[in-house]
Image (cartoon, rainbow, N blue to C red):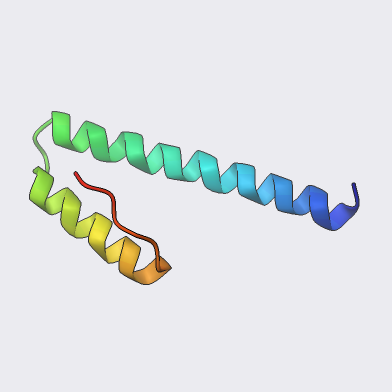
Length: 58
């Protein structure tokens, strides 16, 4: 494995960690009733539009 591949693996792991962290934070906001599902869906839709990915349902 060359250095570029090791960097890519490291960056991918960090992205997965951050995505999981955000997901858990959004769940906590929902459970604490700080935000409702519609508000979380707005965030999901905005992120999806920026990244070009399909939004998940909240």
